[in-house]
Every structure is written in structure tokens, then in C-alpha cells.
Length: 446
Length: 174
Image 1: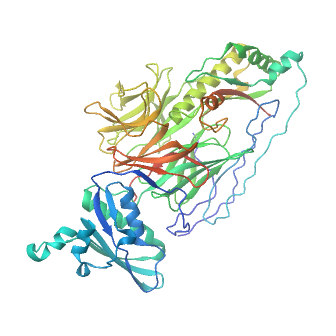
Image 2 (image 1 turned 180 degrees about the horizontal axis):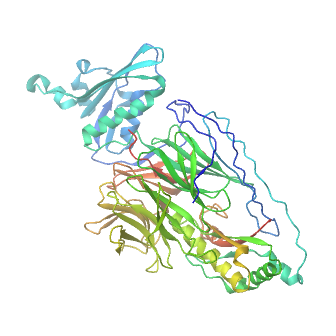
Image 3 (image 1 turned 180 degrees about the vertical axis):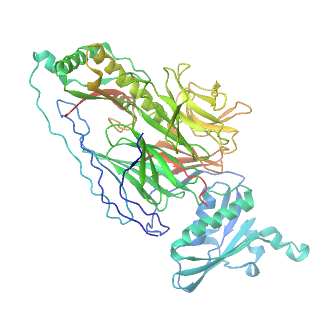
């Protein structure tokens, strides 16, 4: 297997917020009743006004997570910028349990010192009697103008983790494929954007299909399938530089690349068969990324595809039709023992583990539409996360296990959606142009 | 941050004979993007259409023109009504051992994308098997499954889905 440095154009990723709008925009369609009420006060500005509205970015992040109910917005009439200025009674009347205040101060050409505090409104109100400290977080960070948006997402992460105990995903990215059809030709673009849809950047542009993006565990590379040579090929592309390497281009299927948790291997699907004239069937292989050596995992005449690694790297789940229809199976990489995992419904495919290793998210079809389901491995219970009035596919888990990203059909177009894994929240991300499909959520990047 | 720009263009020059009622992909080209925003220059070769000389009577020429075959939901069995057309294509390929085809497999967009690629391959192989059983050299046939990635139509009705579930014999220019 030759390693082809395709020598294509290098691509630069920067934090410069060139795009003033998002390709994807979020619409929260169902929130959770137990959401934490929080007020985010517009940050005070000293000196040159920054290009980013920090409070607005933080508000959208927290609101769209479904775990917070962001209060006030335009209705806030008190504008403290630090704990000492806060009138806690006002914010209690607003209904807030927590409060974020801050300030952006120009300290040099394109240099901004940002300070923020997360405050507990109850403790603040009772501070005089109890002496309890209302300040939960307090930080001061200096950045350039181009880093302000990323910093706002970082503040969202800190607030989210402080209050929920779970690491936030506001600094992660999404990869997805944009499809634009015209009568003459269809354009496919593999894009990467911030998790809120901002700063979309193309990684690959083609008039042949692109599918199955998968992030490396360190978030620096994406593996994907491209049909650019009138056949399927698996590539690995560096996200920052755009440099890419051809991994496999065998006759037949080259598909479903999946990075191992340690980043050293790629599970993938080939149907090349053993001899040149023999027609093979899709089988799971593991490629060692150092040696490019292939190890075959399944060997039968069934469809075996969509491998996904367990978080401990010891098992691979995959989709197989060996029982007559698509179901999810598991192979232990040590013993090679294979067992069936899914039993609910007549179709279960594209399984992936949650980060805790205790659940599997998959496409599930009971009797009608295709839904996103989450299977509890201890109890064997399957819960359906999406409504059943349309089809859903391509689930991809957030790295903190809180949300699943997927594709669905809305008004006749394929768009992305998100659902909380406890079933509480649904968000739709309508694309501005074309259709959006096959998403992949990045790992934690910071 | 600095970046280099390599001026190597990915040239793909596949080309397909355009014949009959079959619409096949004419465009090829893929470019990985660079940061300067100038984009990649993409050359794409578009194949010349070739005229076939008649290899038989009017009936077999008609059959030869039929190169798209449709399938039932979740199935890959070839419908009997397509046999004459597939046989006509087989006869042509046997008579022209330098001719090559891509056998494309497709599905409707429901379900899982990679599983659909596998299902599409079954459909393409079902047709390819008939060609091979009629004496076509396997080296004249390349099977490519697009799964649900190249839908025939963009709608979501049952009629649309039926149009998507297909195998296509696409003749290549040598």
C-alpha cells in the first residue's frame, strides 16, 4: 500500500473570524424543564470595542446546550461588570440562580484583557449574614481580537463545567459534508466549523461524493472516503495544513474509516476479496498507521461494515447482516469472540460507544422511520432519542457524551440535528445553502 | 502561522461514453483547499461521446441502450424483465473484449450510509454476475457502489426512492 502525499493545496486554519455568519444556525426546538436559570450580563467595554459580543456568544452556547435557561437578554437593566457592583436582589427577582459578569478592556493594539466572574446569586444575596463567597469563578485573560470568539467559548466551557460537573464542548468542532445539486453537476464539500456553526472552512471540494469523516483522537486529522477517481478511496487529511495521504484504494469498497482511541490504527472496510478475480464481500480490517499493514477481522460472505472502537480500545462494534438484517455485533480484539449487541427493532446500524463505554448510540428502525437510539449495555434497554415523523441517520456523539449530532430531513432537505442523550433537548441546524449530511463531532480540542 | 502552497493539481481524467438515455457522471475533479482563498484550479476531463455501430438487429440495439436496472426495497435480486437488456450488454462486451464498464450500485437514502454502500455493491454485483456468467471477462468490469451518495432524484417520496434504488452499466472510454 503506497503512501501518497497527494501534494494538494495546503490549507491554513486560523482563529480569524472571517465569517460574520454561520453556515449552520441553531434552532432550539425543545428544551429541558430542569434547566439552570442563569443571567449573562453584557460585558463592559473599555477602549476600542471588540469585534465579538462575548455575552451573546456565551448566552447562545449555554442556551443551546439545553442545560441552562439564559435569562434577560434585552430585558436586563443592571450592568455590573464585577462582583463588587452586583445588586443580587435584582438578579434574584429576575429568577437567576447564577450570574456571569465581565469586562473587555483594550490594553494595546489588537490586545484585549478579558475578565469575567461566575457568581452564585443565592450566596451573594446572603453574603452579609452567612459570609459565603458568591464568586464561583474569576479569571483574567489577555488575547488578540481574533481570539475573542474562542475565548468566549472557553468561558462557556468553564461555566458549564463549574455548574454541571461535566466538561463543556463549546470549543469543539464539527465536520460534515455539504451537498449542492444543480442540473448539470453536484458539488460535495467536506467542511469543518465551530460547534455553533461559525467559521466554516472547506477541507475538500469535489464533484464526486465524500463521506464518512472521522476525527483522529488528537483532533488534528480527519479520515474520510472520497469517490474522486470513480472508485472509493480512504484519505487522511491534516486539518490545519490540508496535507493529505491516501490510505487505501483497493478494488471494491474502501469505507467507514474509524480511528482507534490511541490514534495508531484505523479500522476500515474493504470488499476486495482475496484474489484479483474473486468478488469479495465487505469485511472489517484494521490498518496499522505506522506499517500500513492490514489485519482482517471478519471473514464470511455477509455484509460487515461500520466498525467503531470501544473507549478502552479492546472491542470493536460493527454492523452485520449475518442474521438476515442489519444488526450490531461486537468483536473482542483479544479473543476474537463475536457476539450480537442489538435486539430491538428490525434494523440497527452505525453503532458507536458513548465516552463512558456504557452505552451505544445507533440508527434504529422499529417498524417505520429510522431513528437515533441509545442502548444501555447494562440493562439492554433501548431509548429512542428522535421523533419518528421523519428519517434520521449518521449519529455522532459529543466528546462529553451529552449530545448526539445526526442528519435528518426537514422541509425536504437534509439538515443536521442534535439531541441530548437523556432525551431532553432537540436542536435543528438548518443549512444556509445546499444540504448538510454525514456529521462528525471532534474530540476535545483544548 | 505560515502555509505553503503546492501547485500540484489533482487531475482526474475519467471519461464516460454518453449514450442513450442514461445520464452518467461527466465531471471529475477534487481539490483540497488552501488558506489564501484562491482555491484550486481544477482540470476535469469530460469524455467524448462515441457512437456504437449496430452489433445486431434493432431489438438488441434497444436492449443495449437500457443500462439502468431498478431494485426493490432492501433487495438485490435482478428482476426477470431486465434479463434481455443485461444479456444484450453481455453479448456486446463479449464481442468487444477491449470494452470496459463500471457497474454502479445505488440505494435510496434511508438508513445508514456505509451499510447502503454495501447494499449498493450487492446490486451492482448481481448485474455483474449475470454479465460474467454470460462469458464477460471480469477484467472488463469494475464494480463501484455509491450507496446513497449519488441519488437519482432528491425527493423523499416512495416513487423517488424507487428511482434511487438502481444499478447502472456505464461504459468507459479506454
